[in-house]
Amino acid sequence: MSRLINRTKLVFLMVAKGEAGLLVREFKRRLYSNERSLCLRRDLDIPFETPAAKIPIEIRPMRDEDAPKLLGEDDTGISSEAVKESARRKLFFREKVPTCYVAVTEDGSPTYMQWLMAATHNDQIQAYFRGGVPVLKEDECLLEFAFTLEKYRGMRIMPHAMAEIAKKGLDFGAKYIITFVPEENIPSLKGCKRAGFSPYMVRIFKWRCFRRRCEFKMLSPDTPYFFDSQSVAET
Image 1 (cartoon, rainbow, N blue to C red):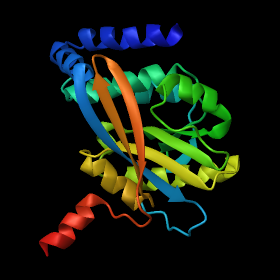
Image 2 (spheres, rainbow, N blue to C red):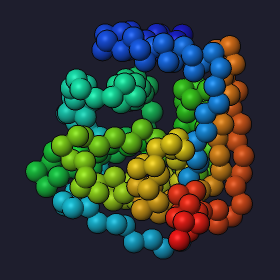
Image 3 (cartoon, helix red, strand yellow):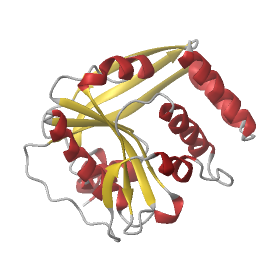
């Protein structure tokens, strides 16, 4: 019931932000659509050098005082999709699923946030994502809801922070870290590549009359990112 209430709140948040157009697109999407995302995976046993950010940052668990700065950012002037993702982060924060990590500057200002979730929280994960992510094995962790504050974008914080947060999976006994990115989100895919992640499988959401079916299709080992294949083909 609480999750139904949260999803209802998501609709009200869209209305409050004046995103009637987004609600119409969401209606059409859930009526009939196919959506593809890449599942990316990093093997923590493979040595990987964390890419440097342009400013010094430190990774630590999120604190109460970080929430207003990371979740209270003004949504004015941002895209409809960004408004939707902002609302999703705020609602997921209320689920209290461990652990959200943040990247902070030398003076302690938060710049970036992302959840690293272990298999021990599979019940909460599956209840929230409703089968949209696979049940984690004991040696797996899930990375989700990455977000960089607007003023810190372009500083290569995402690949650095993501790579470092992924390593926290070792504390939970994980060997593999997985994350999902829509195929059309090229900047995020490239950031994940710089963080040491590789294509692992494809997730397909099929919406038919407001019912969602999820399919996972494994990729062959060493499958390249599709934009790398395109670059090679063009040379």
